[in-house]
Image (cartoon, rainbow, N blue to C red; front, side, top):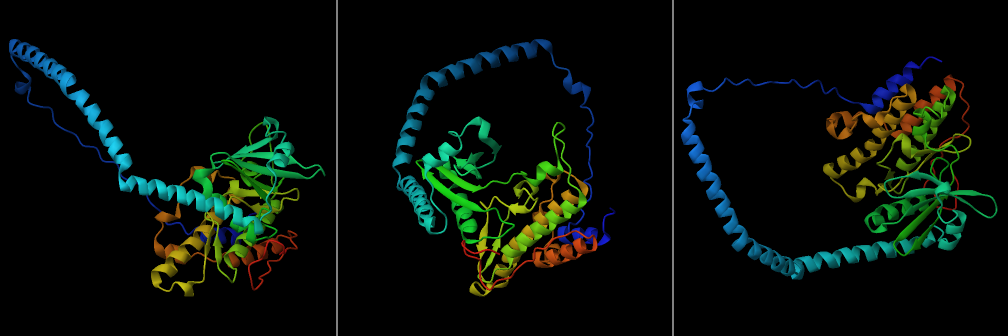
Length: 373
């Protein structure tokens, strides 16, 4: 099937990347020094080198014997004093307070997300066995879990949870508040000592990146109808995030690796650790605030454009610098909204006779966890 011209134009519109050009390399050449300056008397050089070496060794020996012990002692004293300073005490107290607040936030989220038993999850993963390991991410390790009734779940185990508390809270808040067919369903969570467990519905077809860039011994193929279906689903999910009446949710980490596929190849957005809720612009008036909010939203549009480029060309875009931070402000203003993108791709799928019965539903409020889009 030939690539639709409108799809290519849409991709250019989404990415809106200005050319950077090539840097020119400059080389400097220096002339050789005057040969007369290189000619020194050999006896003078020999004597000077010997005297210099003897003096250096003597000075170094005196310094090591007298000064270094005092330097070490002073360093120990400085460290002790530093640990007792009000500033250091304040920083440690603030850090402990922040961890405590994050733990309290996680516990308060039980009204949104079901709290699960650690023993039950451990048994479902066969004590987090290597055989059930299905992935390794920045925050933790993913395992497949099998419930007694035969259902499959995926478990993200975050062992060193203190440095990821904010990301965990963001994930729980976002997926605990929103529910949509193109968002990864969050089944529950668990808190056990310094370990956090996030439990999701299992996606049997893995992530989109592995389908676009299969390894040699595990060949995978995505036909064009499936690629368009995935593009529509991702656009629909992002449009749902961006167009809630209570505020816009921005993902800020869109890539083919965070797009999971269920058994029917319906895409699910995951990895909401960097997600943010942007309240209405009327609550924080000002041109600067308005532009910052728009730039965050358009960052997701740019991320979707990169995914669309991967779907069309098969390029590994993770090795290419597509950072929109280097793009001029006027280029950011020209990107369409995700709702416009969704409608455009939806129209293209109809022309290509790709069946997709799902429609985006724009409810007046953000969906609670118990409702269904």
